Image (cartoon, rainbow, N blue to C red; front, top):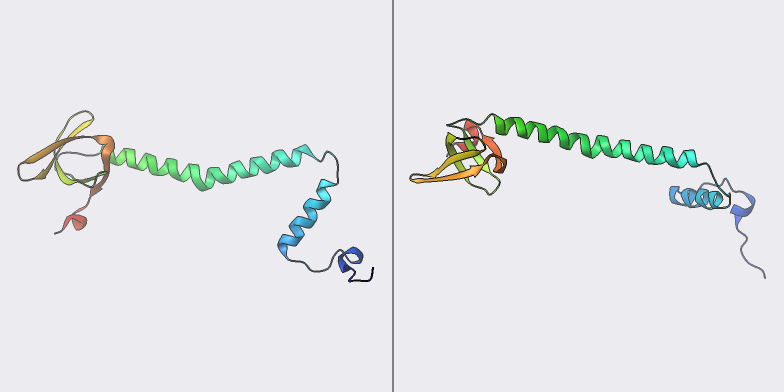
Amino acid sequence: MGGVVSLYRFYPILPMNTFQNFIFFIAQAEGQPGGNPLSMIMFLVFIFVGMWFLVIAPQKKRQKQHEAMVKGITSGNRILTTGGLVGTVTNVKDDILVVKIAESTKVEINRTFVHSVLSDENTAS
């Protein structure tokens, strides 16, 4: 059966792209029975730590900043709600804010529905 002989059989260190290297090393590892369980545990720990610093920690920081902003709302602040209403806080109860959204229209909303406190430059019309 004449044909092309793979050079990888004779020279396994020939330049290959990264994906081929990955497949090559996985194929070698599958031939080894057992393996080191410590390497798998370290890999999982590495993935968890990476996810913590990339996803969980920044989200917790934003959540704390938002909670501090919502606790600092006082009468006279202009707010934006999560529903898109923009208004001025006229009265603050425990967890309820009375917000004036039009000349004779006031609504009561829960503090948790405040998206942001608007600064003066954001409200200039």
